[in-house]
Image (cartoon, rainbow, N blue to C red; front, top):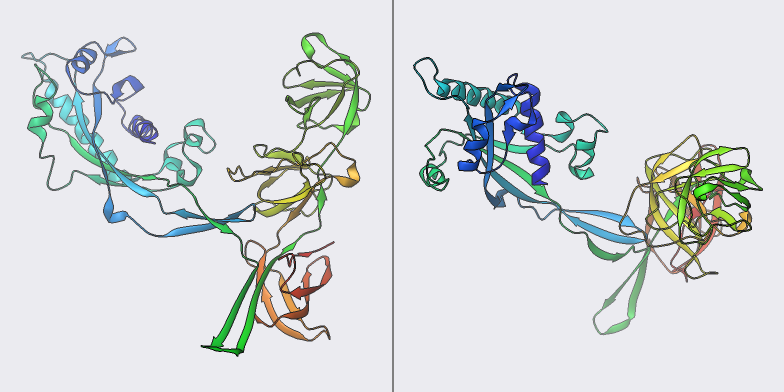
Length: 449
């Protein structure tokens, strides 16, 4: 991310210092003989201009900010621990340069000092660097930053009181002809994202046995269970059509059932090569790319949902919310006939019935969409803030809890036996389920219909 930090500083100074109007005036190479030649020939719009050299001369870990904190997340039923990022101090030396030559009427050092002052003032007013305050929302420079750090404040140390105590060595290392120049000593602290650590599968049943030492008859077993409340299931869209004509270059494609597709659907003919439907006109589908080998008589269908794919269509988005956890259940395309589930984060639900998932490196399942609509994979949303009751078989309430932001509930201090779970949600029919504790399958989820 150091290159992203360089671009951020360049944009910040271009935005706030009037005489800096072109990116060529802010460079990051060593201020050596090559740089001095560059500055002496630097012009913008035909006029000589001053320049800033921002040179990264040292990198050190900031151990004062080291933390053992961990952030826990659940994806695909696996619990992950994300360590707090390490912190990297980037040490910069900023110097100002004029292309003018000293003469009785020209004193370029004054211009350099003025530019140094303006640069110090901008950095002092900024306080800390935050990409979202420098680059417009949705812009390419902002999106280049890792998502967790786009709105982070990066600490800045400007002109530390002990100064740059290696200044003589610095300039002597820039070769013959280098002269001692003042500069701005700047330290910017960047985060370094550490790798996720897999903690293991999510625990749904925890069994604890208490006993007096050497007295087996004193044993008591207490059980904690956990599950999710899930919204009514939505089917993923499936569909296919016969190819009746292929245009020049393999695009557009004419089919006998265009109603099976929508603009934005990912389609395939062989299950390997894929394209997106960009336009539908009558029976003609214009694809984002020609599908190699596609001929009349092939079946064009909606492609299987792969781990890397984040966009797909559901047959009914009513009530489906953006910005929450969910679960996909369906036929495993790599092992047909095997019904599997995978957890995913629903980032956006579009008015066109398309669902956008948050990208995740831990998604592993490919769901088979080459099935009849009745057997299509299902998308369920985990419901937070839902009241869940634990009852005995007579219907008496034993415990009451509420699901967390991930739609998960837990009940503890249970003895082995049979129970009931009951949940209610606004606008949905109550759900009641008989369970055994411990569950033979380890599953205690409640699904609204």
